[in-house]
Picture 1 (cartoon, helix red, strand yellow):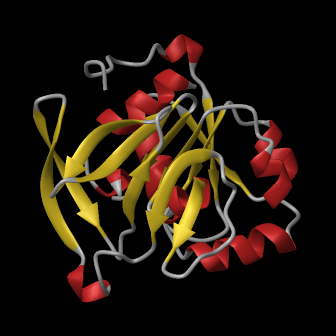
Picture 2: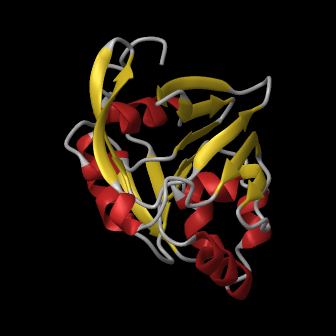
Amino acid sequence: MGGVVGRVDRTDMKTVGILALQGDFEAHARAVTRAGGNAIEVRTKEDLDKSDGLILPGGESTTMLKILHEESLFDALKSFPRPIFGTCAGAILLAKEVTNPQQESLGLMDIGVERNAYGRQLDSRVTQIDLDGKELEAVFIRAPIIRRVGSPAKTLASYNGDPVLVEEGRFLVATFHPEMTADDRIHRHFLAKV
């Protein structure tokens, strides 16, 4: 990630919105706070307008899509001009291509994602991955696999040869759950983008 990001200057605290329709948005809020940011829950366009950056948490991507349309948030997210970080289902929502099965997405990142590619809930795992030459605990829960990374995107970390942390401009995705560990390096990296 171009070196581990240092502490965030608390005098310049950024507000990170966390989509709070489904999934473990509360764990992301705690991680953002630990990393030096201000976290707010996003359920409306007005909440989104207050956000300097946005996290799309894990959960169930088809359920999230349904709620986004019901709450008229899909187009607002698609045109959100600030940094966005998607984890697990959030990575699926940001991808240009989604398979297993195909589904609608925001199409904001040039990646192709296969849903539930690591298998069922029983196949979920906690493992170590390399991030900037240091180990990082990675929690995979019914995780997608990034099958294609377009040329503008950059792989920051891999697991078993598959990209698991990818960045493209103002976008960042992880197929695992960094909010479920005490290591806040990835959230600090996102805050630096914000």
